[in-house]
Image (cartoon, rainbow, N blue to C red; front, side, top):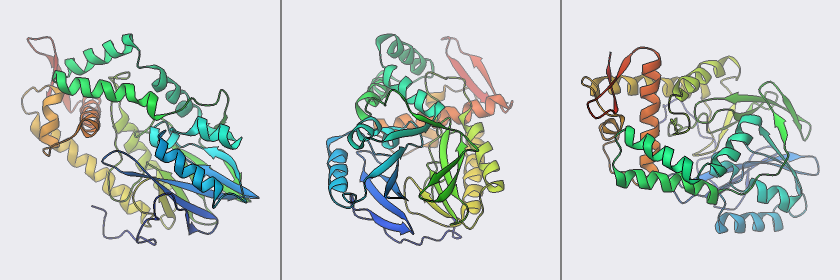
Length: 343
């Protein structure tokens, strides 16, 4: 739950596919997702004679239909000027190729997110699938769950469109001029490797994507292609750094849930949440355990395949974070699979 210090200027979201003004010169568009997290927030930033688009929704017929209605309706007189995608997840970049071609606009992304999108669209070939299967098995996942996760891996390709062959690269510290406003580019790690956030100091607006959300903790996961990575360390580093760069009084425009004020308090709570999670992992792992066996101890409710993939990835993120810092140790079992226990 969000801390009581958070304030929500907009008490309810807009109707699906119906953009509304959430701040001067900023339209808020919500699109549906076919997951437990059932929506994504898209933002349209006034850009001279048109609108800059921030994120796209997934590649499905429903999302395309909403975009066609928005382009023919609210945006008919003032067409899109550019497309900015914050990170590689399908709900943010899914329609990037289609929308850029449909509107004749340039795609803007960070380099890592552009290349990561390309990687995920191409990784679901037999050699990669075999490697992912071995990774999941080594962590102790049963065959049924492994098959569900492999289907999820393959599904990325269908939830996204081909990206344009060229793009406008942005990086941390850059400045984008959008409609006379000055937006500082900040990047964060953990949820995605080089997630883009935009800060307009003059108007106290912070478009935070998935880095900071009001009601849920952004998913921070280890994925098969980087089994020893430390995304939780990256995420906590970003949370520690952002208060020095972003004022507390900004209006946070996130990719999910409601816009809010109270950024610094929310980041402290998110850090505290992961501290508590590490403590829980340590308590569970008093004896050596396969990573997959830790998941139901941390997430006791019944999960579908989509939720299981995130729960498993996030559990591994905490395990890797603790291994890096010597708070856990890994040891091979008699079956050759790696088990972990608290140090």
